[in-house]
Image 1 (cartoon, rainbow over the protein chains, first blue to last red):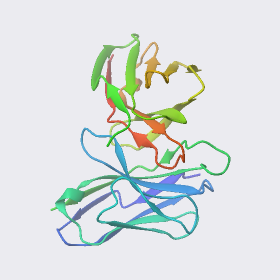
Image 2 (image 1 turned 120 degrees about the vertical axis):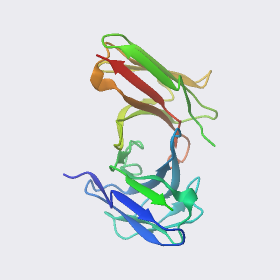
Image 3 (image 1 turned 90 degrees about the horizontal axis):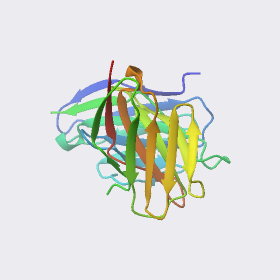
Length: 115
Length: 111
């Protein structure tokens, strides 16, 4: 089992460019999450999906959109990248809502730089 | 805003010593979790303690929770160089989906 996978691992964008970060999990989890991590800070929740077909805003959703394509995949899109979106992005999944606590499994992260 | 705040921000110890990290939070919680993050990697879940529990053990890890003080501590006994990492507390409130992470404690264990 691969767990949670993310692509790409690294990306450099120019201000105003768009891109989509991909995430997939093979643990049959209902819940999936997108976080960003900035230096010296913990993770901040951007969006989450409690189940296939639903998405909700987290703490810092502005400038982002998400799509829960199916149970396995949850993508994060930056429509018009800004330097403030330079960060490391983590995808996570959990079995929360399936009789489990919200113990989350994380992908390896995508390091995004916006020039 | 961050729910959990760890203390200290950084900790440097010798191999074999114990490491203690503390976490304080602001609102009522369902449970509190601790995660480890090695440099350049994703977070890995270590242990979860529920709001009605006071202490929990897992191998060399001991977690305590004091809901009256809204605080938790993580003790790593007999530390090893491989324990060098950042450690984050994460709180789960009612509703559960919006787990909130603290800023983390960076632990460095010298061989």
